[in-house]
Image (cartoon, rainbow, N blue to C red; front, side):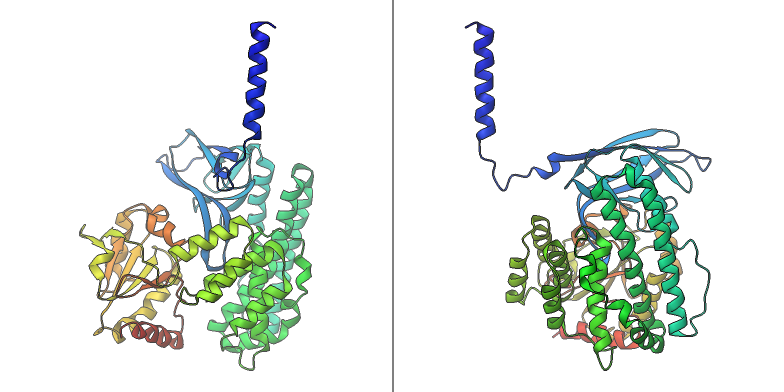
Length: 485
């Protein structure tokens, strides 16, 4: 046997030995196993100054309660005309990517991304064009987003059945247009990609209809009651309609979860009262299976469970068998769980003085996250006036935290006082905006967002309901006072 033959034989034996070694169940292989890449170039005739593009990559996303688990976040400076390449680590074969460039990407900017995609993205003033491996899927999703609200005109909310009937017709027209476009791209998509997008289109229309009805609860209570009655059949369609839908399709699970809650609302003698959460939990466990059930249980945990209810928390955790949801449960219980230590922030005020969490020990702390231009943040500021006035002699500190990208914009807003109050402490994320660690820690993606911390620096609630009416203001004040004792 020659030397080369001996060397070859030894090499083959070594390879066999290596391949037979057991792999630890805890080995973190996901981020190494899946990857994609994107090259971005900014074109067009707009300003030649650089723009910052934010990219987040998620394994799990939900618009309910602002859930998002991200493996990576990237902030890319885009000089005009220059191509910037970025490698992306993905947590799963099918992951989610969010682009943060408001003038260009419509609505939520969430795209399904597949491992192995190699994209080139040309960014124009008001549009984007993808080329490369996976480009068909990306361009399709961009076009599907553009269809939303394309047929809408101002309408009067004179009658609930008429208004909601028109709304349902519009949503179904948009959905039909989306599905027609999807069929044109079917041959260019993987089967799983096609199915995901099809279910997203169907569920999104229903989810938005529920959102429309929920909005009436505050703005038009009488119409809200009519809506629950007239749209009962629409809201209680058979749960098995979505039994084969992929659980990672967020509009599917978001819709099913909100449908269950609103279905219980419609059965109450007074639908403005709160639902029985035990009945909701039983309904989820009874009607759904697999990943659909597990993700809805996760949504339930975030909304209704507190860390002091140890038995229920442990029971829910045992029901989660998929690693992605077990890991998400663990993350949420540690960062957003009630009575867990709050995030130890260090943030500057307008004078440059840095304020830390420990500075507020002995006082209940209300954190209000906002950004300039947020209309809901303005509305909250009006409601907060009554809350601050009622608690002015108590050991409570109201802290606003701006996520504005530019300090000068934040300073101008402080001077106008549309989002803040003289009695509060106003802090800034120091230009890091959406990428600041405190936002990542609490998984904050929507604004305004309220968090309450107790006198010992522990979480009371990281998902406080925004007080939108006088009754909710009183409930908010009562919640604070129970933790002042």
